[in-house]
Length: 73
Image (cartoon, rainbow, N blue to C red; front, side, top):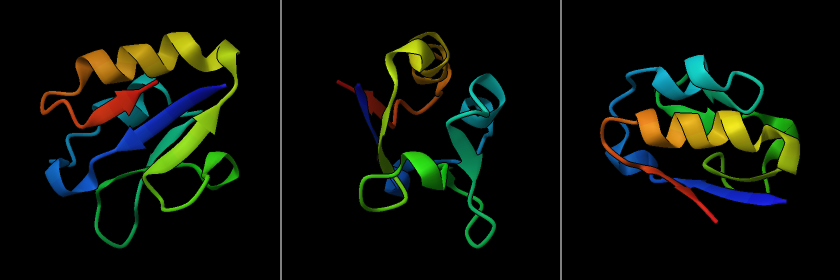
């Protein structure tokens, strides 16, 4: 499993993560910031775990984030 945390306080709502990996990231309809799709959340909307086969798109989303708020471990 891949652990992902989004520092939502630093998110600029650019949309690159949900464009790169729409299977895992989405726009929050209330504040327009990035969040993790509900089925992969492990707590808050910015915390989750993904199966290993999503690694490529999550890594791409992390690398493309202009403000580096997506943290993968």
